[in-house]
Figure (cartoon, helix red, strand yellow):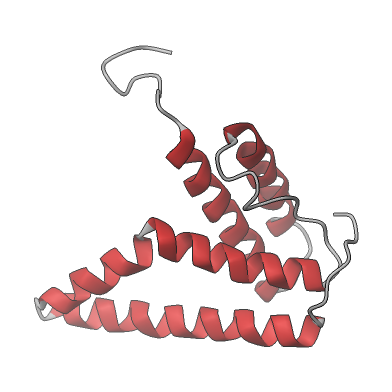
Length: 135
């Protein structure tokens, strides 16, 4: 990853991203505990955590951390409607998160991958096999 300029200090971005991870972890635990006793709230929490907007918000926090650490992520949100921009980013960050990085940066990479794939899926109007068509 190439260094980029940013106005966000690494420690501040890291603290914000860690808070996001902590909040998501608490919500996941709450969802699981409520699902076990058959309550609807667990389903609602799970739905919230898997919504496009939530996934993209997690990605935004991860992008802030990556950029604050001096890595170039690219024009994530400017390329929202360009599917060609999302897949290469997802591939690059998947490789990054599988490398020798801290747990925090591994989660950061995974969130960028997940968000990039979600943005890519929003722009696709045709998927092979979606309507019984083959590759």
